[in-house]
Length: 263
Image 1 (cartoon, one colour):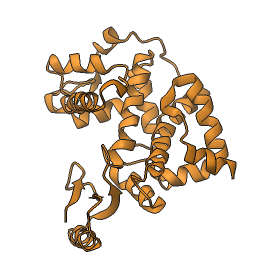
Image 2 (tube, one colour):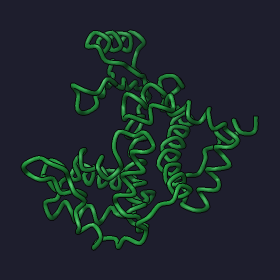
Image 3 (cartoon, one colour):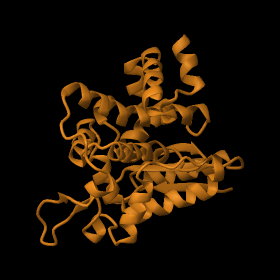
């Protein structure tokens, strides 16, 4: 029987491994895979097969929200500073540089092909593809959203970003910071809720552990499901409804959350 084993990069540092089961995967195969992952001192979580699996599916909206903000005219410094203030290991633009922009462009074009007419483009997608076409591949080419000095030293925001999307917001007062933090965290949490609704992941503890070990989701929260619990389902759904009106369908709560809120 087949089972998928998904490691996270960099493999030597990342503790999480996703075990992807298909319709035919036997319990024995799963048990052997869990055994193997524990032997190599990693933490396994079990997910059902679906595009992006669980962790990447919840993480990608964080970087996508960074692109939305960039396209809306927020200064890259605000976007990444607030991103780090959420408790994420890095801001969304820095994170994209670290992952590699050419890889992101590849993932995006594959997804667009697979989803066809259902695909919803992300603002900034074309611009990032243009950066890649000009050799700005992220940290590995010393140039992406940031310029990386060859001799080491601090990276600086690439001035060309402002030509792609003019900066109109250079200051963020505390209420705006809170709203931006919410956008970056809630867009991930609502995606996790959709994963439950679709049966991609079934165990809340594994979802929490997976979120912290898999993509560094705000460890102060106890994990992505614990964050929703702490906010409370009714309040979370009300906030998501408000944010859907303001920012779009990516914040729309799934029926599962509405049912929880009604209880």
